[in-house]
Length: 422
RNA sequence: GGAGACAUGCCGGAGCGGCCGAACGGACUUCACUGCUAAUGAAGGGUCGGGGUUAAACUCGACCGGGGGUUCAAAUCCCCCUGUCUCCGCCA
Image (cartoon, rainbow, N blue to C red):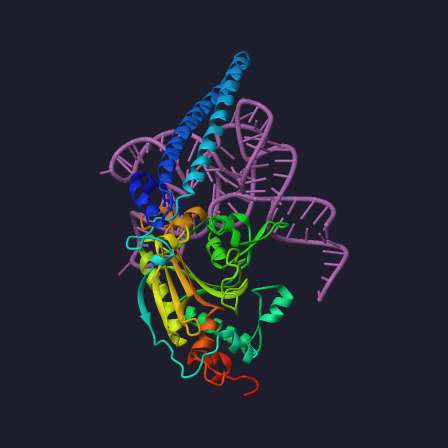
């Protein structure tokens, strides 16, 4: 939710942001008007209410003879107060409806424009070359007995799969490597609920444009989360948290569910785009002043992970029009996928500034002792999708795959994944 | 699934329909004092929002799990929801 003070004091800044995103800037003026209406009706209600309270005291103090007349007058006042309160509530709701449509104000420097307007910040690592025809991750996965799409489809349908044998072990190894690195950086591990209430889903902004990609259980009115970010953001909802010791960092592990509605026919092969996968997500609560620095730290940790796994990647500054409504800036790291001859997204890290926390009411105490909305940031530290890049990058001509050194301790020292027949 | 009890501020715990933003403890902060971060004494605090101020001060309203209702007036009465605890059943 947008900062109402910023909206009032610098509506032009909000409009610039909406323009950069390619969103409607008229809502800014609408919100401004709704805010004024809301404050006016609130003042009216509060004035009447004060009058009523004062009059109530008179009623109490009055003698028996005076009372009936006073009560008659008090009844009129009560009716007026009730009506004014209803108007104030409606004006409040209207302001929320309108202001909700304003997305987070993008940070200075974020490239304007749509999806293709991203800026590449850096390319790191050597793009692997092969003196043989490289196999794609599914072919490798099948050779290794690691990925079984057919049985996934048999049991659950398209875009479901089984990870089996070294495939299952590889994912667990990846998650454990990520978790150990997170621990070393002061993250608190958290295994989160994956079914959440509507208000949490709403509060984290996932019922906006992405509502159609979310699984919903109507019977219980619960939503399956597409990332543990949802539960992690909701974790401190309605709380005043203590940031005096620095940022609070959580590493949330969960299975993630995405309906992938609207992506029919896209990435249908293998486990690149699936309905269910696992992810270790970083989630940070920090002060607004520290948010941009923390954002850089998050990308840094992500890059260390990709580096440790020997993957070639690029870091992109995602364009304003491609940001989620809560994000003020987002960096994606895309790894080179040899058989696709292109970079594909492995991580994403967003700085949501105070936008998310405002809606969820997560605050901290400033040095002056006042409360203020915290900044929240999130970022991927490992997901099932990484297996695609790992398998393809480190494959050898015989279909075996070299295990990156960083992963070996988590696989009992295994140095290579070898096809059963080899 | 059935039956019952409870839900108050950082914690514990009172609370008659108006004098309750809420007693009393504890914790906490500040000050004083004892030559030590211990003891003692005193004082002070909540959250959200409106108005106001350069910022304060100040001021008004809302908030006693959440939402409705009754009433001139609700923490206090009624209804619904949610959560917690206890017992029975069920499953392990």
